[in-house]
Image (cartoon, rainbow, N blue to C red; front, top):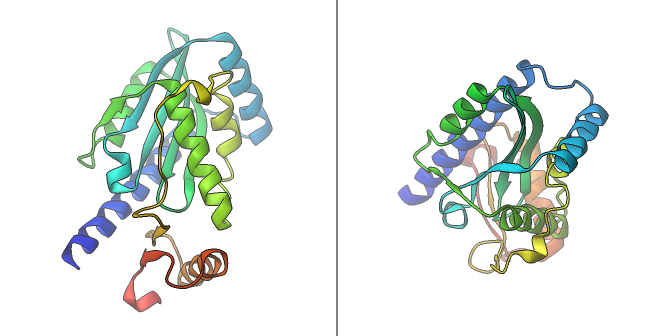
Length: 214
């Protein structure tokens, strides 16, 4: 139980940090509309090379973490996609596209690693394979990616996930594993558990939720 509580607390810290960084990015002057962000991401993907692609170390051991893709647009701007990926159940829980000054980009990377799980380099083809695989796995369970996923995903451009030879297995111990997040209301938690029950059957998934909420 203590191990599960530590893991749940870690997940809460990860999600809180993702929301904080998303808010910081929004304040930095990113385009306000999803359509504008999608256009800018596609333009950056077709024009600029990848200069940074990182992932939370041991992502598949802890279940949730970040994938960050950066393409330098100029000496003052990095086109950036950030994904908070739950590889055990819900896919892309958060994601956004933003154009950041270099110093803010580096600050964000440092902040995302503050939880004790450092970011390490990953080949962009494998990063895209993980993101796409997590989204597909979650869709099979009945869960859609975050609303801002399309502009972030567009920054991958023509990066070919099939070029990554690594095979990734989603879920934990052969089945979905749902962690309730700090912003998940009792109603949302019950909805997720109900969806999992409908899709895979009672007893065919694991979950950790606050006792008071379920």
